[in-house]
Length: 502
Picture: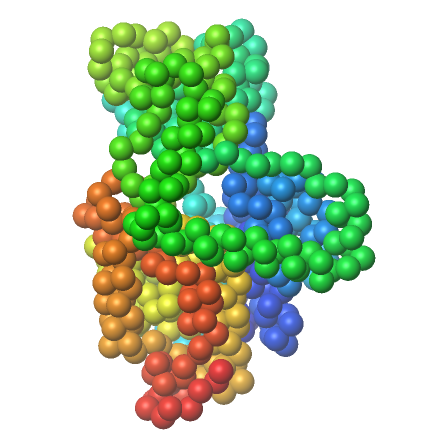
């Protein structure tokens, strides 16, 4: 069954980015669009992550859009369910729900150069295909969870849970539980499991740098003030924004301030952990910022509870009854919790994207993704990536960056529609120059200082992070240069002029 309607825009994903794109397109006068969402409700990662203790490690006032303020955040760092409700409220407030088609999972995009239309294939019993002049990929950088490839895992007879697909029916009372992983999810999960399980063993591969999480309840008076005087909330947001911007001088580049972060992390560890051997186990050996910074005030205390133990021996194999570590000890377990993160799509979306002349995005990005300003890729016209290559922040709110991407995408989409262009394709040489500069700047960052992280490909190529201030990123996203693109009209090829749609 082929859809005969050609949408002006099709959005993939109904998380923060997808709903934000819908709002911005509506405000720009683009009315003919739809959103395809594989789940049965909005929310993205904040819908999927319901594990105990799930919360954002960026302050709520900053982890939200400036154009959709929420005056009633309950805490400085709001829990996942509250963030999900905020996305639901955004959807309702701007009447976006009627534009969402739920239970529709995209499994391929194919561009028709003759018509300038994207064919969007979906997993559907009827083999349905959607068509659109422009596409916004807003499924996010972390849509799919990842279970590590551990020898013997298929032999294990106990229960398994992944942090991104939590089993709320499982009763941890009286159970011996393993948590594999010590990253951002694990430091939230472990303190909660220690309260419930008989015994928790935390299997650590690499300790991370950790700073205290200064989480407090938002006073009712502050919520009232934010609601009545939005300018006050904006001032608070700006203070948080500039405070985080300053930390780039410590987290993005290795400076004397990076050493200060290390001293603060060690002071936090000394203050909370009295045992010298445990402190040694929890002390990182890499530069702060090289891996994602952890934020918690209750993880270290949880590790020292009588029913919790940190294991830093490597896992040799999973056995039918538990985990065997390389020191020969077999740990008998009732349940294994995988807090091992996500399948980060550094080589593009988890489905085939075919561009001009049959070009394959996954093949071209196999050695590392590259795009122009993280949002457009040469050979894949009229396609706009949210949280695309080299747009990740190491110090500020991701949604600050996404907001810049939304404005840029809307600028590009409205240019295509208003000028009635068949397509806009970023010039190859423009994209190449941009990425050469990005990679040169990345060399000097903490992410390239020698540690292994999900920011890098297996070959050490950094396709994830933006090497600069959020302010710099937003400045480039405000500058939409028509001359950077080949503009193809229906029957005419243009783009050599210097006219701008900015």
